[in-house]
Length: 358
Image 1 (cartoon, rainbow, N blue to C red):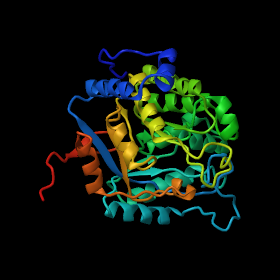
Image 2 (cartoon, rainbow, N blue to C red; image 1 turned 180 degrees about the horizontal axis):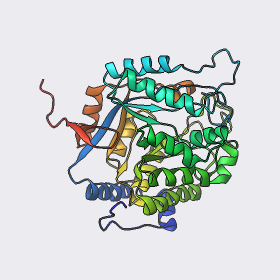
Image 3 (cartoon, rainbow, N blue to C red; image 1 turned 180 degrees about the vertical axis):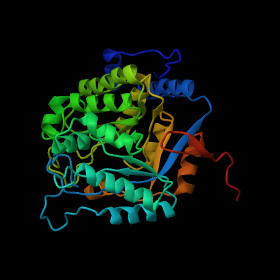
Image 4 (cartoon, rainbow, N blue to C red; image 1 turned 120 degrees about the horizontal axis):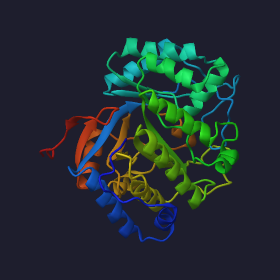
């Protein structure tokens, strides 16, 4: 289990005060203190990754998603293993060390197809880390194959996969899920996949997508459910929140146009304090803004996400951001930290300790 190192444990009422009432500067200071207790070296990590999607055909049709397509749509696609391998190789040639592999819930994509994708990536890029398949995808494929999700996880583990992304969590409250993703797995099912994955030896991330129909109480419920599972398994490596991007999705016009950057910083800080058993909290320059992402580094986050070689899901909402290594290093340094490149297990592989010379 994850060591808590004498960090205080906050409960639901505390979390609600953090989200609603605590002055933001005071909350940021408390979260920064908790972060420095856990990571006293002042390092902020990042990874160079790529996020190709093997298909955009999806029968789940989440109401927050602008990426999904129906079979027969002119822009619907499913990549062949060879096409996917070539995309990953191109990203690796640019420096990517991790491939986050996710797609739609496509009834024509089988477990065997997944294994072919994994093997094609390994053939094209033997050294790249493959970080594939979120819990909703695993449940969807398990139902297709008439298997349990545990059996699907065991097949992936046998194939050499040892980390899984935490996508599809959205908010772990079935009231919210019934409104924004009624055809996706339940909150209990998402957690059950993660618990079984942890017991099989996978390390996984956990996520939160906020800024749509959820309440403050439901955000805290989400954090507490993650914390409870982490108490049992210790299998979560990091927590990654991001705000809903409404552009082009069925929720456009029904919810606000996007969460304020201050709300994002507040959620980062609250997460660091509530998730006392999580080693890492990730800030994102990509999903939010460079300003919000850098502020989050002094509000409890110790990781700055990825330098993306390819990303498609948020791009379909009109959300396009680009940065490069020099900019990421500068942002981390301006926030008062030492940048370091990591791998998918959050192990540091390169530290950028010196300021660049003019």
